[in-house]
Length: 357
Image (cartoon, rainbow, N blue to C red; front, side, top):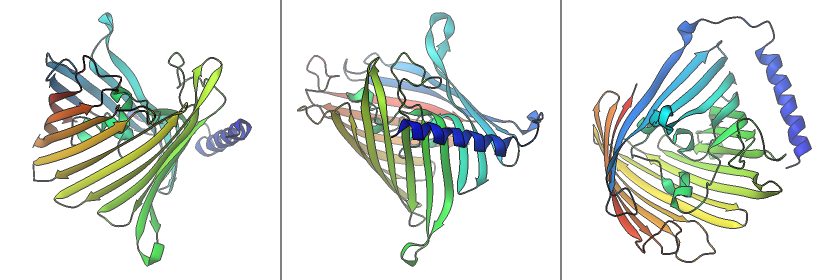
């Protein structure tokens, strides 16, 4: 994309936002409007051999705090701070991370504007990838959302710093039918080398562009399309193109839920694809589920796939408290870069207590 055009467009957006949001002198707002909420989870994981966590370990994975600060009827500031893996700064254990911090100005439901650091809108799960109370399983599908841990690279840069336009509850009338649509598109710094803070600087003049559109033909069916494109600086003097496309489908009835996604990506000449299918049932406080995942991290290499079968149960113990238990079976090709000692398969036994507050 022409960098001069991007720069002019961004400048125009900032000037417009400043004029709309700050037409008069700013004034203090009451802390009474501040809303604080969050979630906590304690996990246990054990693997059948050394390809996973064979010893078995408890993990104080998340203690996350989210804050919404309404400034006016139209303007709100939102932030999300994560304390991960039992943070101990004295021993450099765990991490403290600002997951997002942005303003959101709502002109109407169909047109809202965000600016700041936010999760990239991509597929069903990227914007809630760490919000464990929001999904049934212990983790979101790794084949797409954590592909770097399966021998591939990230399909999409999980967080973006820049501008995000979004809208929801948009009525459509194709073929005389009543459909709804939502959308979210963004432009921002995108991917950088590991030594550059993408929330502060951009390694190159190229800006990442991405987004997602969801269509709802009925109350029970949803289909979506997500995309991402941008150049990543792979070293000081070289950029590599990264392009990703994904399709999502979901069916939700009172008793049965089916969701599936497929994604294709090309980065620096390497092509990868992934997909999953998950089926679950709602049986009151119990929700059993099954998921099949597959990742081909490099289509030019033989026998490097990573396949996973997951059987689990989500139990709603009481208001805001969930117990998740599951068994994962991993089957990898000998060419996958994470295979060691010739051990291509292993089981994982997992459990988590999740609390939303």
